[in-house]
Image (cartoon, rainbow, N blue to C red; front, side):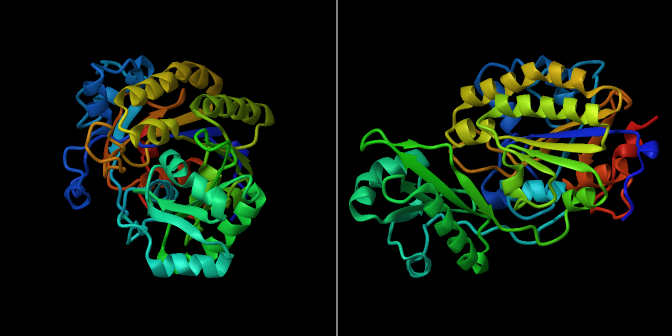
Length: 402
C-alpha cells in the first residue's frame, strides 16, 4: 500500500469522537435484545426536561431521523444521520470494530447467570488463585461484599456484568497490580474459546468499609480477527492516535500513540492537544477518541441527570474543538451502542448510532440518512485518506464534498 500523498489530501486531520452509550433510537431487531422502546437520546432529554446542547443541535443532532426531543435548527453547520449496527450484539468492542470495518456474525458471550464452575475451576488451575463470587455484579458493590473475605483468604474476586467481560478485582495488599496484570494475561489466553470480549483487571485499595478502586484498571480484549481501518491507515503512513480506551478496544493494534484518560474532560483536552499537534506537524492524522462517562458513570447506573450533565459538558467544549480543526479538518461525532438510563435494564441497548459530520471544507445541512452499517464510517475515512485497500460499507464522503 503506497503512502498517502499529502498533495492529494483534502483533509489533513480527522477526529472521531465516540460518546460511549449514546444511542438514537431502537433498531428494528431491538426486540431480540429486550430493547423495544429504548432511545437513549430522546428518553434522557424527556426525563430531565430537555437537554442544553446548543452546539450539537447546531450541527444537526435534532434533525436526525427518529430524534424528537432535541432542538431542530433550520440551518445546521454540520451534516447528520444515523447508523444501524450490522453486527450481532450491542457492546463497545463490537460497535468500534464495525466502525473500523469488521462486521461480526455472532455476538460476544455474556453470562447473566454467572460463570460456570468449569470456567472458574480452570481459572484456579491456570493462575493458582482461588476465586470468590463469579456472578454479575456492580464493581463497587462487589468489593464491599467480598473485600474482607478476599483479604482474609487471598482468593480473587471474579465477576461479570451485562457486557462480555471477565473482571478480576484484587486488593493491593493481597497481590501487586503487576501480579494482577499477570493473572489477567493468563486468563485472557485460557478464555479464548469462550468468546469473551474483555478480561479486566480491577485493583483496589483502602481499609474494609472504605475500599476504593484505583486508576490502574487495565483491559485485555480479544484481538480483531481481521485487518481494521486503523491497521490500514498506520501501514499507509497516517498517524493514528487513540484517546481514552481506544487502545484497549483494538488490542493496542493500528495505533501510533495511545493516550489514556481519567474522564471526558481530560479526553477532550487530549483530543484538542492532538489536533493542534497534528496541524503543526502537517502529517495526515486520525484522532480516535472514546468518551466513556456517559455510559460507565451514568448510563449503567440509570442516572438520567448524570447522562444529561455528561452530554452537556461535552457540548460546551465543542466550539474549542471546531475552532482548532482548521480548514483541512473533519470532525465526526457518533456512538457505539445505546445505554438508555430510563429503562429497567442496566445493560446496553440495541440502538442506532447518531452521526454528525463537520468540516470547514464540507457541505452543511446534508441529511446522510440511515446508514446500513457502522462500517460506512470506515469506508468514508478510507476514501478521505486515499487508501488503496477498501473497507466494508459505503462512503458518504461524496455527499459532503462540493
